[in-house]
Amino acid sequence: MEKVSVLKKQVYPNKSTSASRGKLLKKRIKRGIPLYLMMLPGVLFFLLFKYLPMFGLSVAFMEYDPFSGFFGSEWVWFAHFERLFQERIFLDLLWNTFVLSIYDLVFYFPAPIILALLLNEVRIKWFRTSIQTILYTPHFISWVVIVGITAMLFSTQSGVINNLLHAFGLSRIEVMTDASFFRPLWVIHNIWNGMGWDAIIYLAAMASINPQLYEAARIDGATRLQLMRLITIPSISYLIVVMFILRLGGFLDLSFTHVYLLQNPLNLGVSDIFDTYVYRAGVLGGQYSYTTAVGLFKSVVGLILVIGANKLAKKMGKEGVY
Amino acid sequence: MKSRRLSEDKVFDIAVYAIVTIITLTVLLPLIYVYMSSLAPRSEFITRSFFLIPKEFTLDAYKYLLNSKEFIEAFTNSLVITVGGTFINMLFTTMMAYPLSKKWLPGRSKFNFLVMFTMLFSGGMIPLFLIVGQLGLMDSYGALWLTSAISPFYLIVMRSLFSNIPAELEEAAKMDGCGEWRIFFRIALPLVKPAMATFTIFYLVAHWNSYFDAILYIQDQSKMPLQVFLRRLLILDEDVLAGEVDDILFSPAVGMAAIVVTITPLIIIFPFFQKYFNKGFLLGSVKD
Image 1 (cartoon, helix red, strand yellow):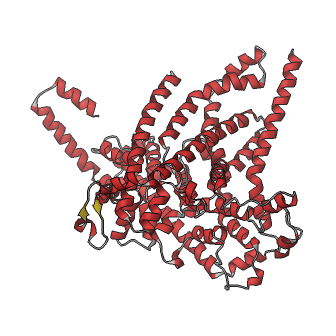
Image 2: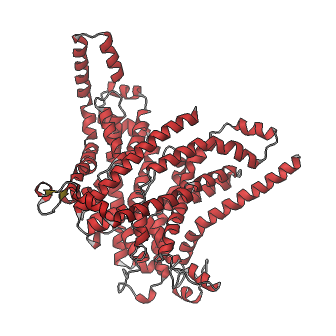
Image 3: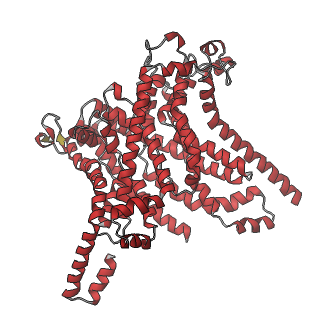
């Protein structure tokens, strides 16, 4: 719409059109009043709970004192950032986040793709739909329940899996407390929880592959495995690349709830990430300004990653499609 | 040549079905165990170290839960949080998505940017926490409902759904003297009903499963939702139910029964909406 008005301006650069344009705009605004009213609750939501916190980030540059309030607190500028970058915990948080994200990319990322490739080869329709229904289900189960089931199954005294290990003469394992189990357990949870759901997008892409490609290859004597390798996988490769890049954009976004629930004093060394640290030191510990600075650091790096990834994905998407 | 290809295909087929079956079983087995062991009597956990199907079935664990004041309280709280929250979600989201679907509306692109930007950048946990405190929402469900009133992603999807409604339909309604609000409630909303049902489910699941918001904004133990109760019972192994009901009845089955009561409502409704998920118009995550 704005482009059209610019064009009009160039063609008729006189006052009367800009006046009539103003009139038209006024008329539209007047016509839109009920719609603006309709939007009011939503706009208030965004201002209060999305934008006000962004301005609230200025707390990171103060020594926020709940009793003096936002306007009574003293400005300390970059003191909290200096503290953050000097503290040993900063490197730990960064490292733990990095390792978990790598686990996610290496072990989780391929899982829905492999599952979609397999499901795509299942020709019996009722079997395929019931399998899909079963595999979506974990996506609707909360982290509390998933971690809870794990805790029950692996309970050292009465857990069924430890009982089984014991019955086979193996030693009992402390999955929930032994730090070396934290990362594998975390990524296995992710696979169990999200694999079926995330396969949907790949299945949708596979459904849109031209069936004539398969028929032609079939006439040429290709086996089913060759069809998958030479037609299905290349056809979705651009989607895989785009999804991979978008995942890189969310590199710092690990589910707080999931990590927090698996966390305990024994595995803190590997399980502490930015969000859990902010919760512990900020909400529970009352160091509001310092933890806001930690949050701001995470948000800014996250923004850079997301924008970079989106740009890259758009580029790749275009090259892949055309 | 051809027969070799056919036998290769057969091996491929068998491998595919075998792997898919194994994957499905690894997803299913823990859930089957939860359901089955929730029906097992206490004695079976002591005498049999491993079982998938109990020899005897009993509803003791469920009776125990229903007699627990704390469990009933947590369950009721979760119901209130979920119903109230989902209602606010749907009202706020549709009422903002509909005006933004109008291409003639002045300022539309600015509002769209306002929404989009929140998906890229956020103020983070602490500033929001402080603001909720300043607004006096601490320890009330208002904090849970309002801070998550709109999912920007769902808002954008809904906006594009509304913009598919032909303009002629609304023009005709306007000729008949309908105002924007009437058009919205009487014409636009009914037209996107199936999609709205899906969004309702997504919001509903998110509230029912949400844990973090509750520990952040709620301190009063009597207001805590089911997920917080479950964590204390299952993961922290706290005696949340101790002394309440006859302790002799307590067994691992009680924890399993609590899981069953929590997840069954979602598992039951979900297949009804599966056809909408498969369309692939919604690929976002339900969880935080």
